[in-house]
Length: 413
Image (cartoon, rainbow, N blue to C red):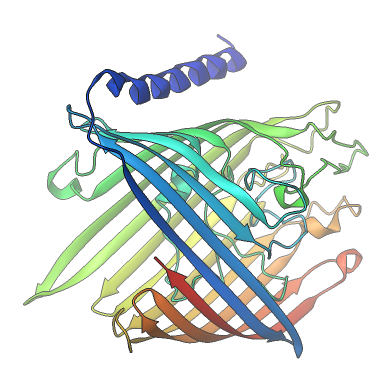
């Protein structure tokens, strides 16, 4: 069987299996449907080298679920998002990690900051958990990165970057919220020393253009060193993610414990190029690993991601990023405070032969320190200082740096 035939067969098998799991319990009587509403929002105001800027982010999720007589829980989740601060630039392997069209941000008008981010169904039972629909992939679900006390302002995996220069991103979320199938075995299914191990796999058939530069790039307008233009239909397909997370509490004496959390993931996707035979591109591959250590109110950790960014010239170092940080919390109740220090760095290597796309190649350094105060359960306010340096080719504007001071207020419910 050819690779294409194999992937087609795998696609049919996985999607069929997911549909079967979700419909198998329909014949059983179920408890009344339970509805849960959760969400979070943040508002940020700050100065970037003396210029005032701001940003607002919000997410709202509605979940409906019921438990069947056989003990299987089935449900559905719909998530809407408001996100106004996604810089309109092509990232050098960072936030979307590729030159072809990356994972979709969601469903909604191209010009709107509000959109439907996720919509999926799930089934959970003794067999584990199956998720079918638009959702984050397992590589993001089980990811580990440096700790933070802020909702949106971070050196890595940020929602708000007032400087517009930060390309540090170690989360392996290349597939975005594209339609996918995810399976996770039952928690603690291995028992013993591996009782804290969680595994999972995700499969995304197609990562299509969402019609906006946020999908990096929007129209496939990329010219290779050979002078070949990619068509707007160029995209990634047959994306597979595998990830693991392991957590262990180590008793140090008395009731004190050191908690260790380790996450690792691998993502691959096939490049689908139409109207071109450019040798510039290859299948996308990315690896990510993270570690957190927590003792009392102190958490220390970091993460690393390496990817070829879908470029044939690089085996695994087209983009390399890391972050590290430490946080201290006195608690999460009213009047508690938290402190953090974090750093990040990324390198997006240049092919050295493509001056028409200089924006794809940049090296980034970022550092942040901040403090937050708990106003009430789930409500915080904080202040942070950031420094970001972006080294770019002269054709892309040359090196830039920015000092940013921000105030963030956030709420979770």
